[in-house]
Length: 341
Image 1 (tube, one colour):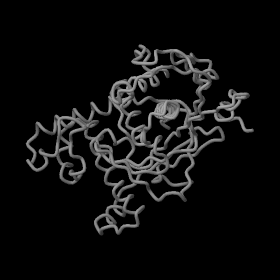
Image 2: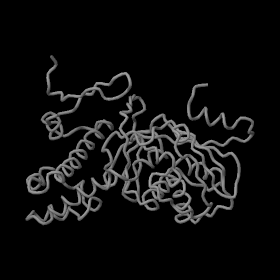
Image 3: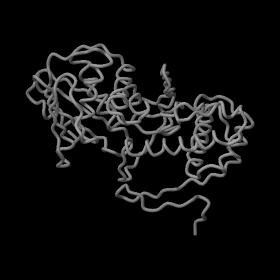
Image 4: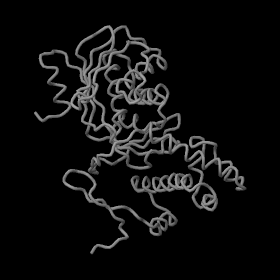
C-alpha cells in the first residue's frame, strides 16, 4: 500500500473491528480568488488531497493526536473539554480549529456532548500552502462528529458550521470559499452572501496540475491587511465629489459595497485621486469579477456580448510564465511580453 494519510490511518486501526474514518478535501482557487469575503461569487475546485480522522476510543473529553504534526516534530496533541472548550492563546494551534467546531455546535445548534473521543488525524494537504488545510480539518472533524453522534447535519450545514467555527468563534476574517468547497466537493460556484447558494459546475473533464511553491501563508495574516487597504480606499472615495449613482453603491467597508453593480469605467477616473495601494485593490476586485462573469458564460456555453469579446481582445495581458524546476519550486518567471532569445 502506498504511503498516504489514508494508509497511515488504516495502520492505526489494525485489529479494530469498527472502523470509522472521515475525510475532507483541500481546494484550489479557480475563479474570483478570495473575493468571497467581499460577497462576490467564487469558484473553487476540490482537490484529491484530503484530511482524514478516525476514532480510537471513547473518553471523558476530546483527545486528539495529529500524525501530520508529529512527523514535523511539532506539538501534535491536544486535550479539551467535551463542551465549550476555551481557545488557547496560540492563534495557529491546530487544536483551536477543533475546539472552535465543538463551540460552534454548542452555540449554533444547541448540541451538548455526553462523551468525548480519542481521535487521530493525518493529512496529505500541505499546511499553509493555500489549499485550505484548516477548512479540511474543520470539515473532517464535523463529518466525524456528525456520523458518530448521529447529529443529522447536511453537507451545507457542515459547511456553514465550519465557516462559523473559523469566522465567528476564532474571529478569523475568512469568507465561505474554503469550508463550502471542502464540504460539498467537486467544482462549484458559490454565492456567499446569505442565503448561500451553490451551483455544481460541468468541469469533470478538466485536469489541473497544482505545484507547491514552498511559500507558506495564513488567512489570519493576509486578509486583514487587504481588507483594511480596501476600506481605506472606499473612505477616500466617499470623501470625493463623485456622482450619487456611484456613491450609493459604495459602502464604508469591503463587505457592504455593491461590487457587482460597479463598472471599472465609472470609477476609474476617481481611483487616481486615492492611495495607490487601495486603488490597486479596488481595480483587482472589479477586474477579477468581470473576468469571472465572462469565464462562467464560457463554462455554461452562453453567448458572449460583442463588448465582452472586444474586452478580451483589447485587454493588455501581462501574465507570468513560470518555469518549474524538478523540486517543484519556482526557478524563473518572465512576462510574456518579453521575447525568447
